[in-house]
Length: 446
Image (cartoon, rainbow, N blue to C red):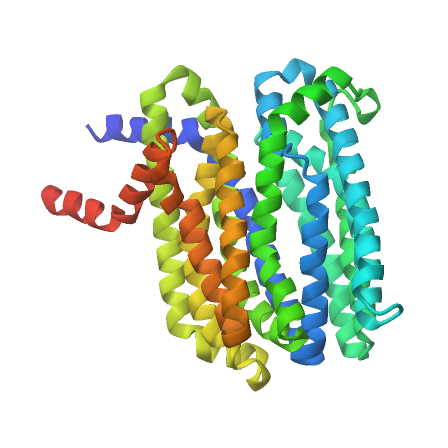
């Protein structure tokens, strides 16, 4: 009896071993990134203070918004294409890198124009934007990450990013102890982008049998990818807008010091967002195959993913809420005391953001890309409107409330209004009830 049970356990483990190992690599890289990034941010915030740290945080938020020009809606689509059509990977990768390259270059040019229009010429804020903008130019190489995702070989992307982050972090720490001016802290960020691209290319040449030189551009494939990805692209733009627009609006409506207060809290809150992405990205190829081969099992697995993501988010949000104030003051000092209240509110957005990660993959698998645009657009619009009313009165705390409410509306409540997404709304609702559901099962077994 014991032998048969052990055999079944071993068999089950072997079935999911590749997915577990892939997920562990992604999570390990993100944990490394989170720990090192938080350490660097603590040192930077303490050294720069709320005002100057706010300038740097504002610059990074602006970069994130303009860098969306290079997203082109290809992330999940390219992985899906590589999984379904491995014999056409040269065409898919070659076409994707050209499209992303054009997009990022357009974003780079628009960012330069924005810097000249929005910031006093040759001011600190101006140079922060100008220097950071060059990090965008090396991001098209990220298509290699899609190739590794499709092959469940995330460890190579993880290693590339960890090495680049380590080098960037060590440079930043050295600059802090050298007591340099704010503008110089933009250089490690650009170097990190360059080094990540180089390492991805090296690992691709090492693992690929086709070689980078055989990639080819196809105008037909480009039109196909753009047609399929345009709605995801627009949705992703909206997603970044309502993730980063709060810091931009805080700077315009209140001032950079309030941006610094908010940024410290949002950094600690958003540090956890890698978890759902890592989990769902590793399971994405398996879900694609299940959707075709076993629809019932596909839905069961999807529900389990929603349950898992909700439970993880709940645990994180609860713990952080209890320790927010003393944690902020201990790590960042009394100058950032107000960040504690912001963190207590902002962290609860994770409940909806975690489940949103699974919903985003469901959109791709079911090929209902319009809902990416609808829900993300609703989130961006609601966040901007709420920020407009909340920020003048409540500052950073108001921006945190706007973020929480907009995520709840766009990533959960809005799904009930469309027949196609109502099943996901039900899955999310069941996930929210998962503590009670699993407790009932345990009691019955007991």
